[in-house]
Length: 192
Image 1 (cartoon, rainbow, N blue to C red):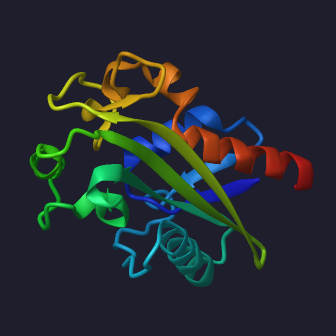
Image 2 (image 1 turned 90 degrees about the horizontal axis):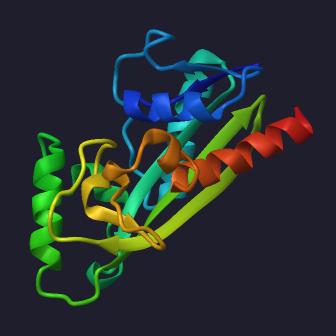
Image 3 (image 1 turned 180 degrees about the vertical axis):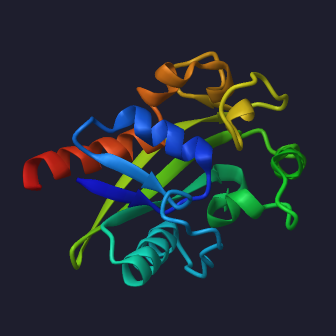
């Protein structure tokens, strides 16, 4: 089975390809020649993931899935949430996003946060959704050189290292994306 992963984020594509088994071939947006951005106008991670998947399905006719992931910080009323990648505005900058988050969080003692991923899968005309959550906390200094986004300031519960300090294999066994993808994989094995 071929599935298009509706993202331009090559880091996400690499993570997913490491999780998906050989009987499912993952195609990126680059693989199908799609270079534009899909505008996310939803008010939730769930809505945004459906918007992206529906766009690819309706324009390319291919079975596909899309994710939307957000970092939700308790003290900041779950910000940055759906605005995680563009939290500091445009042009998009991971460093500026992290600086803004740490600055906004600096006045709070509660640093608890969670990463949440929602995946929407479209096969034929059916839409299925899967969610993964990992709880943790934000630290005030960048640690680690792996990963992407907010990984260098997020320590998952039960760990002493940030996501950016963990190997891809370690991260993939506990991450929010892994949890959601695993649910999707089990669904595909059972039903397709």
